[in-house]
Structures are given as structure tokens and as C-alpha cells.
Image (cartoon, rainbow, N blue to C red):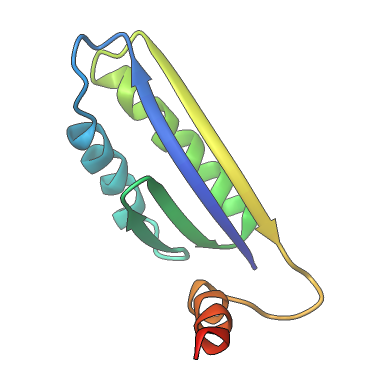
Length: 100
């Protein structure tokens, strides 16, 4: 299972606000049953099968164009660990356990 962070930024919109684009991208995520996701202030974390995630990100990348953006910059970070099962929650708990 992969954990992926994605940030999609529309350019050429004439506005500095991104929330409406983020909301539209999350509509894509809501339709995907096989992946789990978490919105953060600076991006979205997605957990699941890497092929399914990349396919979903491709759809999300198109959203700003459909909303009138002239250019879209998408950043993707992939954590694909195959030596043991992991999850967003496990990664956070591992750090939190060391803070006590």
C-alpha cells in the first residue's frame, strides 16, 4: 500500500484563493471507494493501491483546467513501503509514541 501526498495548484486564474479548486478535486476523491484520504492545510494525503492513486490524481489534475485555469502545477510525493504494512495512522502514531 502506498501513501501519497499531492498538491494541485491552478495558475492563471486571476485569484489567489484555491479552496474552490481543492473542493472540486475532493469531489473526485469522494467517488473513489478503494482509497483513503486526508485533507491537510498544504495538500492531501492519499492511501491505497499506487496505480489507483495515480489514476485518481490524473483526474484531479484535470479539475482546475475544467474550472478555467490556464496552467496547473501538481506535486506528488510517494511513500511506497513494501517490507511491511503501513498506513497514515501508523506513521503518525510512530512519531507520537516517541514524543512521550
